[in-house]
Image 1 (tube, rainbow, N blue to C red):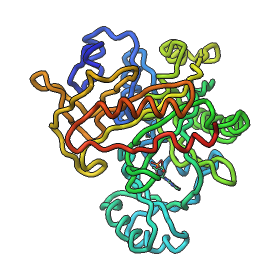
Image 2: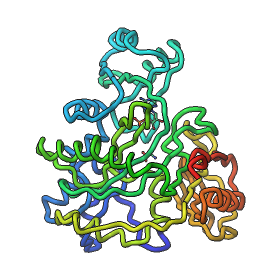
Image 3: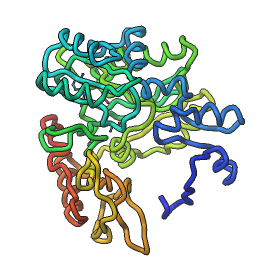
Image 4: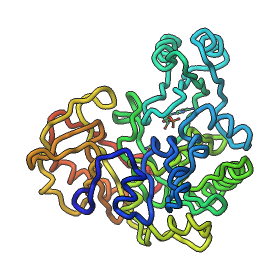
Length: 374
Ligand code: AMP
Ligand code: GLY
């Protein structure tokens, strides 16, 4: 970003927007949304795209999201909300193994444990249910995951192309969950029928119900879906774009992206459209040693100058005395395209091999699930 923009180190976003005379603000991450950045900017008459804090609860509170889905009749996993370890132990009896445990607040994709045994469930409850918090216990859903992201002005809805993330840290979806280890977007993840079903059963009821409850959702609504044998079910909502889903979406986007976001702030989204390039895109996340646990930082990153025909999106990096160093869990997202999914996968991994830092690890199987649709 520093190559194309001025980066300000501040959390006083309103003052920052005022200091650069920002005409339009688009919010990326969930924390400022949950803290009310959109409410704050609007109260000062500053144009901003994103949900108000009350609407961002769809992501910020698992309990709110689950209860909302029941009110709106949106298909999701059966669940129970508990507030104590004793209550959690009692409720566990109502679920089969594996069972899913979810911390209530924002956790950067790492607040979910899938327990395969009672012992793992007990450990998970103890780890996630800290005093004063709530925990959601949820039925395990089997199927393929899809990230279905739309943008909305509170009434109209413009869907982005579906993408597929890879949440687990190791190949074959093994190991603990992360914020996302890689994604692809190839126009084939869902059929037109499946997309219409998701719009009718999930997205349209969500937008309509949020409006009816007096907290209209303007912004990106991300439905994390499981395509089960009984149809699509919501695993989670996010109130923002996904990471690394956005990297692959932006690689395929042909039309202007600012225009629909701007139109949405005027309630005029119905006149906007998005055009996608046919070529599939793939993003492989290069993570630091230890991720998704505590990570090692400050290692030198080399090889970026050898990368060709790919976009390397920076996440956990920093510049120090001219050196590029690791600074966080997910360090880089290498993104490339090709005329077929298999060539896009090949092109991406070819560029990944140019890059090196101490302890670097990444999944080798990003996009493999999609090959069966080609
Ligand atoms: P969430 O933050 O709720 O999306 O959960 C993170 C990840 O955990 C999801 O992307 C899934 O990979 C997994 N997960 C969450 N809920 C379930 C569920 N009910 N059944 C199976 N896997 C789940
Ligand atoms: N990649 C999943 C997320 O952004 O939450």
